[in-house]
Every structure is written in C-alpha cells, then in structure tokens.
Image 1 (cartoon, helix red, strand yellow):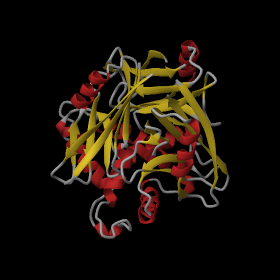
Image 2 (image 1 turned 30 degrees about the vertical axis):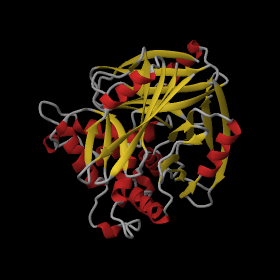
Image 3 (image 1 turned 90 degrees about the vertical axis):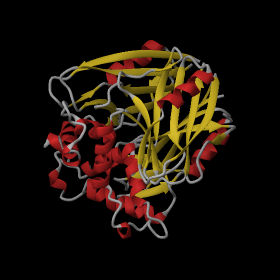
Image 4 (image 1 turned 45 degrees about the vertical axis):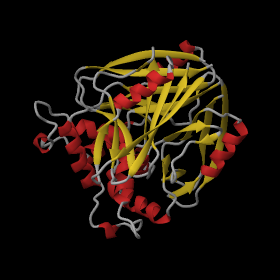
Length: 138
Length: 138
Length: 138
C-alpha cells in the first residue's frame, strides 16, 4: 500500500466563499502515482467545508442565501458560542455542507460523474486555512 | 491491496424517491472477495444522495416532507440556478442527506448495526443515473 | 495492508448529548500500530451521529437549539414514523450532523487541524449504543 499527503492553503478575503479545488486535487493525485485506491479531501478547520457539487455560480449564490436562512449569522448574540467570537453560524453551515469529500481513484483518475467537482466552502474567512489531501492505494 | 469497482444504474419515474440498495452493494462485496477493508458507495450525480438510515416507509415519507420544508422546490424562480432548469432545491436536499456512504468491511460482510441500510435518494429523477461502488482491502 | 476493528459503547441517560470520543479513538489507533492509512469512526445506530467539530460547550448548546429548530421533536404526531415510537426527529438531526467521520492517519497520529475533535452525538438516548472504529493502512 502506498500513501500520499499534502496540505493545500487558502486565504479568502471575505467571510464566505466557494472555491473549486479540483485542479489542485488532481495535481496531488498525479504526483502520488497511485492508480487504484481512495482520496480523502478534508478541511482542517471547523468553520469551513469540503464538498462535491456543481461548478455553477448561480447555484453557489443560492447555497449562500439558503445557508444564511437555515443558520443566520445575525444577530450574533443568539449563539452562546459567540463570546468574543461571531462565527457560531459558520460551525452550523459547515455541518450542513460537510467536512470532507471521499473519492474513488480508478486508473489514476478521480472516478467522477460528469458534473462532480470538489469545492472548498469558507464560512469564516479572512485568514489562512488548510485543506488536507490524503491518498491511499497502489 | 485489492480493489473493486462497479456502477449501479437507477431510473426513477418520479422526481423524488428513496431506494434500498443494500442487496446490490452486498452482491458487489461478495463478487470482490475482499474480507477486510472499506467500501465507498457514492452517487455520481449532484442532485441525488447515498445515505444510511432505516428502511421504514413512514420515515421516508417524513424525510420527503422535511426536506421540502428546508429546501422547497416551489417557487422555482427563487433560485438563480434555475435558468432553464428547475432543480436547485435538489442540490440542497442532497447536501443535507449527503453524497456518499462509507462502510467498514469485516470478515467479508458490511459491518453494520442492526438497522443500518444503504439508500439511494433521488431528488431530480426521470432519467438514468449511476451509483459507484468502490471497495479496497484484502 | 493491516486492518483493525473495535466497538466503543456509550449509554447516555438523557435523550440528547454530545460526547468527545477523541481519546478513545486515539487509543484504538495506538493499539492498531498503523502508521499510514485512514480511520473510519461511525455510529452503528440511525438516531445518532459521529462528527468532527469544536470541543466548546457553548457551541454544543447552540447545536442542540439549532437542530431542535430545524427538526423539532414536538409534536411527535407530526411524523408518520412515530407509530409506537417518538424518535423521527432524531433520524433527521443525525442526517444534518452526519453518520461518520473519516480521518487521515499520518505517522501513527490522527492528522487533525488545531481544533478538530471527534464527537458522538446522541439524539435518542437512554439505552446502550455502539460506535465502530475501523482502521486500514500499514
């Protein structure tokens, strides 16, 4: 069994953003030379997400509006976590969207359906944050 | 390390449905002859879900009602994604229910609790769609 | 490839609770002597969750309030699943929070960001329940 590990770093200037990280993950996979196995991509932070969906800007806007309705940022005083912080809503948004993506590796490629892409979802940005890529296989 | 891959195909005639796919996944596992490892089952589409829960029709009806309340289909004009499409809500429902199930394989079996079953959740049906089964282990 | 399996048992006296199980998972990893691979931690029940987030009691209180708003327990008669049962809401809360955590193993340690911790989320307690730890790697 072979294994591969790499950290990807992101800094989002706004509080929230959705970034397509599929090209970086594909580079990791090529570098690993693993042909058959699985690839785990997870945020190392608890107010961010890694998820798989469509690379369509209208949908990303809809996600933003929808998550804000389900877990509103304001008023920040509604959350007990917000003592000296204001990011409780980000911890909730991340649970809805998920922490990690797990993708099959087949013949050295991400084994994806037609529209599947991997995204980093930031819900409490304006500082450097990491995504972990771990691949195991042969 | 051994690996196994198979696609399962589904066509749901309605927009939404929940289908128990545990028997098909068990067939894949038997065919793979893998005794110890993990099995990844994921939808290859972005408006569908693979999830683990209870095979109880009342609960499936409750999920349908609940997801419709959290991410309503109508009015379709409320979503920017719905330009020539009407399935933005399906992209949200799938995030709540999840894209994939990951199950331990122990002594050649799905290592499940008493009531755990694997489901394909369709939120935008009426066309052929795929589920990927990938098993790695020994 | 090596594999390791262990069940962790919990009994929560209340209906709902959040328990940090990171120390037990770390013990499993040490016992397995696996250095590189992945670790799957999943609840074996369908009204509970294993998830990764922050070990902060204010946030856990906020999660409880938030999940109760998204998927209310009362009135129990609003759910078809509640025929002789009253836990339909627990099946929904668990979908939001997730069934499993998947963590990279690097140099014999959980490959975690600064604040990541693993939790067992109970939504229908007052009986003994299990969490499965499965590790594969080398």
